[in-house]
Length: 419
Image (cartoon, rainbow, N blue to C red; front, top):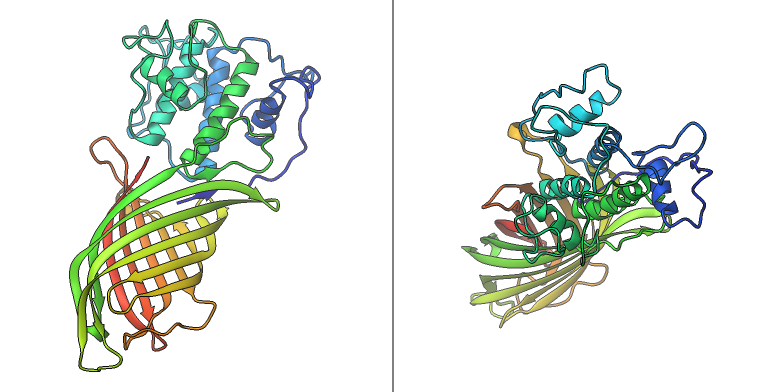
């Protein structure tokens, strides 16, 4: 489901050593004031030029994972959480809970072969790339990346190759030359990296960051999902009943700030084809058995109230293309989206909409008339399939025909893949 977290506005924190014209100013403001994953020092300084060590970054990372879970409603905990302990991180250590979270709960940052975490060591550029790359793969559910190396010093055999490649593919880091991955990263660099990372990852998780985020430094990729369906159509009035229905679809969505509100616009196009029986209005005892193509275009605005709930408003245009009684339908749609929890770890997205025409019903040669309303119910559950994580779709549609609103039911199931 499309998700959004609306954060209460708090008094913005500024730092005496981060001026408004500093290149990292917006990112520092975002990670401190909006995401709440970094902080400054008691003397009101950020000390962005200082290196960040592994303990400190574990705190930033644990906070970022918690923040992502909160705004998206998704559970990012590892499938099999561990309880490993590091010999140099006792339970009394200030960073123990953060290290435990990133190493055992989320399993995105590890230690060394000798059983230590070595948290006082500076975090390196390679370590940062590997950690962020792991989270991306966790979210995507697959490891897909460009195979031609982007850097001279990170070839295909390098232990961090697939993570570095992924971050370049996502346009988080620039390709070319040497990465110099053993160099330490500063607090400024971490602030910018985490800001870019969250701005990229939120749209990937069908979520939108709060409007308080200062001047986005990345342009989110427009997500696209394609789907294929199969099913049947039943219309009692015309005695249509078959299971030769098939369909294809494409959807895209984009989060925006509109009149001070965070919303997500969704555009969908669908093509369906199936045999139908049409009754002739001029000759009551005559029927037409034919093949019909359906074209549906919809533009929806989703007002997200919580990570699990959204209200939907939009327009739909439906065209029924056949040789006897072609007709079209423009409807105003409203409804909602909700994510629910079920036994066995299932958490499907539920969509329910109803659309009605704003104008007069058009005439049609069919005795049942033209479309006059549309109920749509969909349940979509993410599954694992051959290394990918498509959504399994189960949908029921009631297309109301004519002034008497005869029901034409479309029952379909299929898969939706995010590209």
